[in-house]
Amino acid sequence: MVIGTRKPSFRERAVDAANQVGEKLIRWLDGYFGRHSLVGDRWFFDPAEFPWVADLEAHVPEIRAELDEVLRYHDALPNFQDISTDQYSLTDDDRWKTFFFYGYGFKAGKNAERCPRTARLVESIPGMKTAMFSILSPHKHIPPHGGPYKGVLRYHLALKVPGPPGACRIRVGEEVRAWEEGRSLVFDDVYEHEAWNDSDGVRVVLFVDFVRPLPAPAKWLNDLVIKVIGISPFVLDAKARHNDWEKRFERLRGAA
Image (spheres, rainbow, N blue to C red):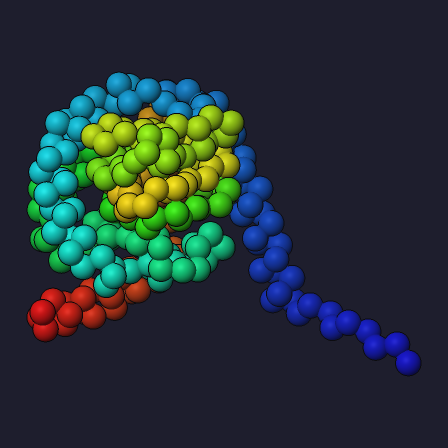
């Protein structure tokens, strides 16, 4: 007797169809925003194209001082996948830590209070949507992957980069660049990218997503999509997870 496979329900078929439509829409938006980008469409961008970058680099000592205080609690910091569950496809250990400040309208208030100067500086970035310290443990490799949406660009300000030179590096598309302490990288994370910390120390960057410069009406469309992202289940779940970690962290600090 041949046992047939179960036919998907109407709801399952509807969800699958919606996902396919959503994927096609995002890919269309990627092409549209790439063609209309005021800074072009490439793997890496010249940081000098963004006037606010120089101000952040000038304040690296202040940001670094606040980071050093955060790193006193390194082991208690959340793993990236514990806050953003879609990162499980990239990392499932405790060697990629995060310390969030902002995420699509959500402000991690206690973290901002712990690092007030850093918080004020990232608030000054035009179109800032996400900001955090991204902390890679020694010999951690983030495998190749692509970001979900071309309406934002990614910024890294290198704060701790252990040697030897080139041990801490990132590939975007076909180009590899090494982080240098106090210097910035700007790139399009939709392109396939991967990162390495092949050193014996901890690598930390200030990680920011900011709105891609676009002319109207592309800008209006991008603003709408970003508002939808801000109220999506993905962002709301990350907010709840962060708040749960905050409560545990406050108890830990109180007991110290």
